[in-house]
Picture 1 (cartoon, rainbow, N blue to C red):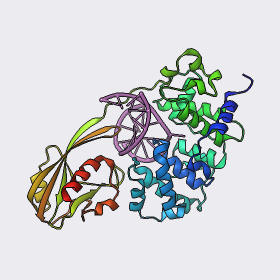
Picture 2 (picture 1 turned 45 degrees about the vertical axis):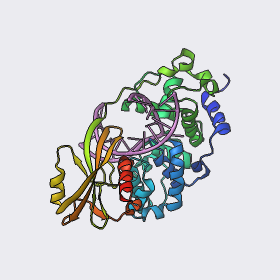
Picture 3 (picture 1 turned 120 degrees about the vertical axis):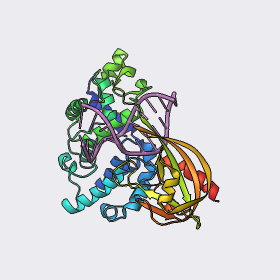
Picture 4 (picture 1 turned 180 degrees about the horizontal axis):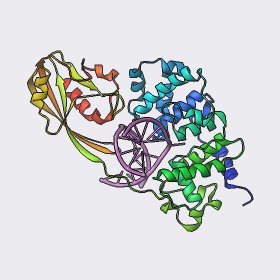
Length: 346
DNA sequence: AACACGGGGGC
DNA sequence: GCCCCAGTGTT
């Protein structure tokens, strides 16, 4: 054990790192986009989105000036849609408040919408080689095992602890590679379950490996069970074969995305239709669908209702021609019902 | 400190 | 079906 685990890890990273698209760029904007996409999202999922997004919005100005609808469409299916909105707001912020140049210091980066402690440290270290830490779930897992630490990583206080520790680990002038090396170790070797300790470059230094505690660490307290909500999903189809979609308000669940109107259990379908000045001509079931969010479950029952007449539109509502909804950003939550609708209409 | 906020992958 | 994840913003 002639050297430190930090240098062993760095050496391993340089020999084994994956060839990822954002690692081919030194453009802070490109690195920023990748870090936002990678929040709570796996590398394999992100890659195609990243490439499409950079082709669509190659620089900060292109993103800042784009219609938000296009930004949402590019994000469709990635989830956590406030990331897309904040990324654009962030680009506008950098152009207006920072003269178009990304700040180098983590503390300044954190003033940009969508950039929190982790992402500020990641951009500062990776794009600018500033000595900042970037502590995420991976880094806490690696730390907990290396040091045999049983603190609950679900607690904010534990994150604070590891941020302070991780700052002290950074080899002089190599923050970018070192931080990426920690994440790479967490992603490839020090897995949540089934860790590949035999292939680990720092196993000689690992307390959990030494004590047979690898699977027991890190400690993470359980989250509350998701709440179940039941909805009737309506595909209202008018005489011209147009379908009513509603755009969700910004900020909340699926903010900015388009959905078929949903009625909570107990709400009356007839009166909803009547309120829009419509008359139901024909009704047929579209089947059931279930969608699980982190904190919520939607149990939906779809119904196609052919209507005539028409007066008012609901909040955020619009009649969309058959097939026209391909251009809208639709969440995965209703994908099954929208497919069933398409089958009925063709 | 707790909660809201998506979706996909692994077993 | 259950668990996990390259977090941030709001309250």
